[in-house]
Length: 94
Image (tube, rainbow, N blue to C red; front, side, top):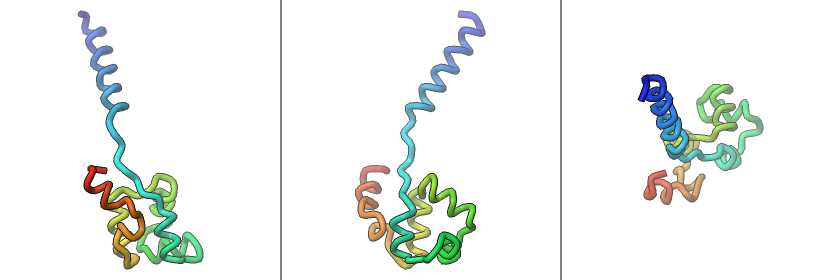
């Protein structure tokens, strides 16, 4: 096998591993936003202590388990009160 063929094969294997890797669970922001009851995303960002740009990321991509935990607690809720599947996800690994 030539060096070029070996490099191509390695690249294909790496890409297959990248594509096949499970993505971590993301939690939608909306349930937390409803519970907080903020009148706008600006006030929600202020209430949760995050920047507007970070809140935009959370709105489009969702929250990681760590961010969901942190923001729910900041708002005075346990994450399982916001996202009922929280415990199941933790027990099943995401």
